[in-house]
Amino acid sequence: MSNSRATVRERLSDLTRIRILTRDDLHEAGLTTHYITAGVREGRLVRLRRGVYVAEDVPAHIADAVRAGGRLACLTLLQLIGVFVLEQPGLHVQMPPHLSRSRHRRPDSAKLHWEECRGDETRHAVSIRDAVRQSIRCQQPRAAIATLDSILHHRLLTPAQLAAIFRTLPARFQALLSLVDGSAESGPESFMRLLLRAMGLAYETQVTVPGVGRVDFVVEGWLIIECDSREFHEGWDKQVDDRHRDLVAAGLGYVTVRPLASDIFFHPDTVKAALGAVIDAFGARLGVS
Image (cartoon, rainbow, N blue to C red; front, side, top):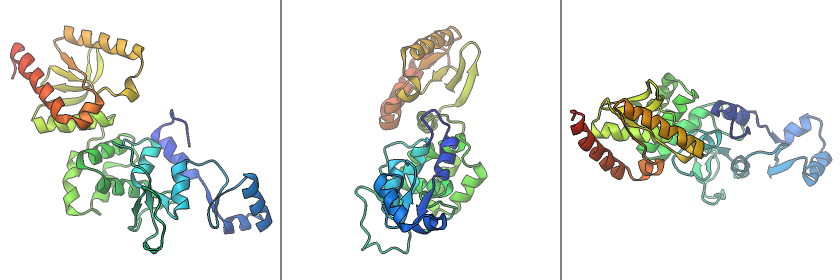
């Protein structure tokens, strides 16, 4: 897999290029049983399960999924390539539906998916479309919407392809599709958008303010909201830049607030109350309601 600076699309490409080899594959390549046994003993090959091998380093989750008899799936796959997932998902594995559930040993703490896949999966991972379909069913609505925002933002699927996936899902999930917006550049932005929508506030996303640059939200025409998160805002230099931007924005008549990502995710009522208080206090001074 690519390093942390690789794009999501590059990581997905790296994932699909991994080759999981069967004993038949190795025989067809001219390797004898003796050579295969020696390769495992000497570390040139790694035996993942009976008759299944890999000749390169692979992420631990992929190795664990193949050892379990299945393929990497759902939230684990998406998080591995850099798509936003709210919480650490553990291991999600797509299992062949024909396997006996009662006889198969369940991996510790793994979430097993037994339904048929619909896309072109590899031996070690389901297709991106299947992983997305699974992720919608495996998360709470707000988290699922944020994951779908990330999928569109990184152009892993088109809106039409996403709509086609929803047509395969039960009716209870259909309302989520209209709330998806690929303009969100991070999970906190997706959650904040849903919060502002619930508050009934007018907002614009990814707005360029002269002299300030692009900001995450402009609410009611005067309130800038920047959704800071540690992943993208570490370092004193970035904090200095943010403070300079806030001062420039204040000079233009904007008020800026920067709620923490952890509060946006896990304490939305607190964030909602704080935003309401800011709007009540400053809105009256600015002559808006």
